Image (cartoon, rainbow, N blue to C red; front, top):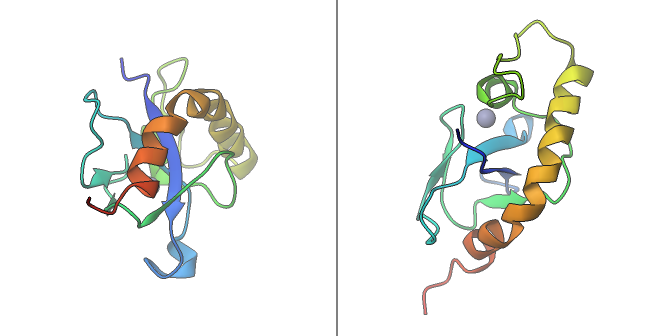
Amino acid sequence: MNDGVMLARPAHGVVSETQRVTHVFPLPDTATPPRRITALCGASFGPGQLLRLDNPTGMPCERCLARTPQQDGEPISSGQRLDEIEQAVHSLQTQVDGIKTALAALTDNHGDP
Ligand SMILES: [Zn+2]
């Protein structure tokens, strides 16, 4: 079971504004953040291309959410309403607290020494 996920969305200019949705990223098991991370929907980003989200905000990526392991193990159907999706994002917020540090290292520490 993958209990490590984080929320982030592309920084301004990385993608078009309409594509700046909140993606869900699985956290690696390693302590070292990878150079690139790939969202559940397949979108891939490098360090500095993502904005960490302390709280879910903006439009969620429905494709990510559909692939996010849910408490009951059932994926969200694409036909569900947005507010239900937002609730799913909100539920992820509790997990975000524990992974802030890892994501901060990825987004704030992208300059090599
Ligand atoms: Zn996505």
